[in-house]
Image (cartoon, rainbow over all chains, first blue to last red; front, side, top):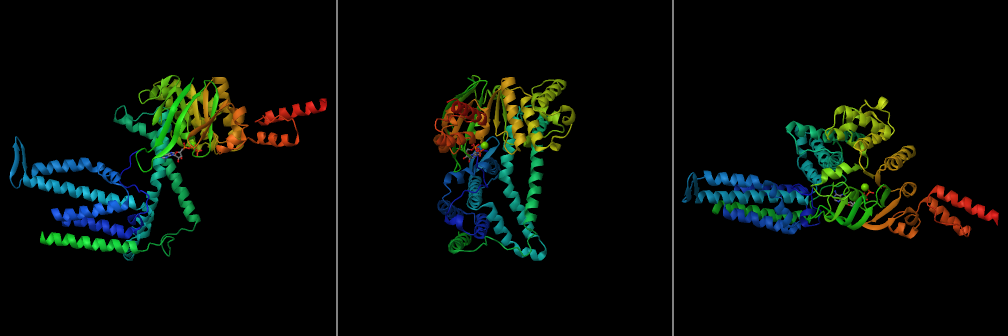
Length: 266
Length: 285
Ligand SMILES: Nc1ncnc2c1ncn2[C@@H]1O[C@H](COP(=O)(O)OP(=O)(O)OP(=O)(O)O)[C@@H](O)[C@H]1O
Ligand SMILES: [Mg+2]
């Protein structure tokens, strides 16, 4: 519980914090696509430059951004090792017993690692600088046209918002109940599988009961305020593009241009 | 003797942007066999401190020992045998099919026979004023709020702790439910000799109940002493965001009109006695 993982909003007032969530969503998606389209050394250097600039302006701090890599480190190491051993191109560097490492393998693996790291850091930067609520708000507005083909965009967005909204109180409740049962001698770390699964009942059951109670209360509260779905509903905090978004868009266009040029000419 | 705390500090979520220092350099000793109240304004660190007493939180710096056992991750089991912990709104931890089974959960984990566990659970129910015959085999979710809370308390008492830590045990109850819980606390202390540490906001309740009062102010130890000293010191209480008990306010205001009236009463009973004595002194003259 003391660890921050990816997906946590870090309050701040930087340009990135103030930008419209739609700009940030599009930027992130574009950045992800470009990472895979233009993955030569120059392309990756451009993406890295963009990321470094973004992290510095966000004022979130490198410590947190780098910490977000911890969660995927094992996956990256695993894929890197496989790549290193399987790819056989270029000159042979090491040839020992069953292991053959080639220059081609080393280059591909390095590129893969850099690409994955850049990807994760970019996505965590989005969640570090955007509250979950404004993120769903952005998604809802962006996908509004899908309403025409009968996709219930508003309802999906509302469900996402509520789900995200309830994560902290549920976490807190889980912590409280776990501590209460631990005080009564509960132990989830010893015994066989069945014993451990059974050990979780005293935590799960009160949590499920609590979740249903909360859901009921929330539904009543929403109905009492005349909530009746998305139709004709206006927003209190209307999303609006500002000067900040114009700057970001310009930078994004330059980046895309550079990436495409790098792809074509290098 | 029972709980010794020295230089304890605690920081939530250390080394993150959300770092929050909740307790600073606390040193005190909670005496055996008495009722000690922990008081303070909202967010002063009362619950944080209470969770140190059975090792749910470990001090960031400093040490704490319970009945001469140092609280560390190695002694957790031993410590939790000694210290029963009742959280704010304990009724939300009920989970089993029947009230009896739920109460017996803790001792069953200690490996005693189911029959013995049931007997002990029945005894604990009687102790908190629930009838095992009428309520024992009902679902805990069918009880009233006050009954649920008493069932949850029974689930801790069944383990016969020598120290009981309670976080706002009377919060959110009606006056009668409140009275019952506070009477129960008194009974446990006087009849069973259990050392009680009770977190509370109510100066009136603690004036009646506590042998000692510890006041926290923004995570620091503000005062620790007898109710007679702590609860009559207006300035000190107000600094810590608390108020005088009504009885003390009454006596201090009356003393402005009635010269010579003692102002050291802090319970209603004490105030009545002081007034009767004062009146006696007047008519004798
Ligand atoms: N899990 C947590 N993470 C970060 N900070 C916390 C956490 N729990 C409590 N705090 C902070 O620590 C401080 C002390 O909280 P605590 O719950 O101990 O106060 P309290 O005296 O019990 O208050 P109350 O009377 O409202 O119950 C508060 O400022 C609170 O915001
Ligand atoms: Mg509290």
